Image 1 (spheres, rainbow, N blue to C red):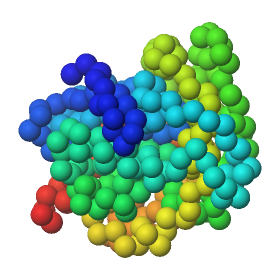
Image 2 (image 1 turned 180 degrees about the vertical axis):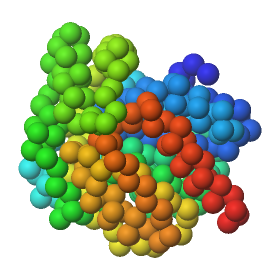
Image 3 (image 1 turned 90 degrees about the horizontal axis):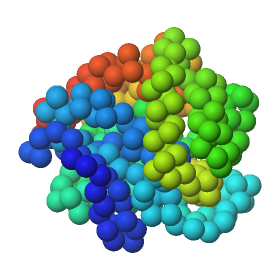
Length: 292
């Protein structure tokens, strides 16, 4: 189905797209910092749809074609817990409101990186809307656990150039720093993704606002301990941006959560691992069906 807009969702307009049978098990994909929904590759979405899921991907607020919120933020101030343009709670409420608009009572939720944090909060704040949770290369918000490599931090905090060619070069460089050493990305695929991302709209100020929301977020560990739903945690052993200890902390926090650490995986979703990811997501969903 082509891209569509859900207007007035939690006060914003959300761009989304769906794949697979409308009567399939609903599966909501939430992408990470500054990453539009197309970073969930269409082939991966079709792979999940082939497992019987009705897959929904969407642009978070301040990203892609969804509403740009506006306003300046200070990352140091966010670290001190001062006011930000919005919170990760708000972003999780966006996801819940999108499900409501689409007439979906509950869904299996898969979140990557910042999307994993949003997915965790969706399960915490809207427990009846989440059938199962798969948290990929994410963390609990515990700052004592998160120890990113300096190269990864430098890449994260470097604003991309404003011109198209410069953005594409920056995108390729970022992928080379935080990507998976055992699963080198296909440069043609990466370049195409960068071109599509730029053409759909790059929101530099929006990235800063999303990052501020993540920095200001409180440690979710106590709330995660109260979750009672099938949960899987997927993490790369070679993730320089969100170290594997963050995945371990997540699985320790959520009762009954399953941990899948993948050697050679960094902070990305390598194409050779898509079938393995799909297996894990499907298994997690099946655990929810068995409980239900």
